[in-house]
Length: 192
Image (tube, rainbow, N blue to C red; front, side):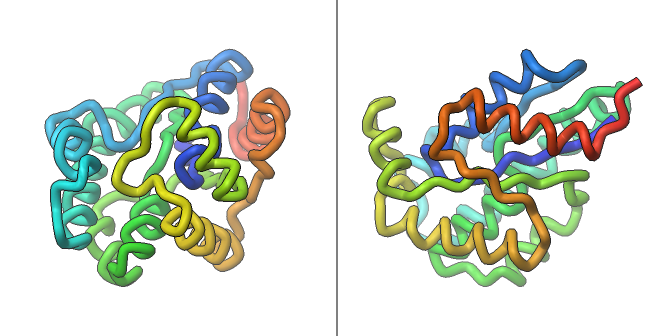
């Protein structure tokens, strides 16, 4: 049916909003990156805990996981008629690895084997709010510190302007954010 990517800095509320969307929209298949596959598990167990010293390695791991994730999970579910909503996709790599010094061209090239989503939505929140949310949920990973989140947010907002992605104010109550996201999805998806 359709493929939607929900993007935003850590602590922007992506997981919460997607959980609410599962209740608001029909035939939603929610997924996330890193995936639950073997490469995704490696990323969670090693790379996000500070594993690599070169951000290009992280970018390559995320791209490999994304290709596998798309082929194994996203593409089949779209063909089965689901609205697939992924927490993170290519724009996450552009933003996060970009903030770590990897060129946008490199990230785009290594992700060229997967298609763009039908809709990419950016959940935007001030990094200080995001950082407080991260602390509240218990601990930070490799990319979850304020100065880095500021860089990532700048890239997300620049990409939204360049690509015409809708940007949703995620500092509000999750139900309000989810309602706005659901409306955007309804404009793109034809419900039967």
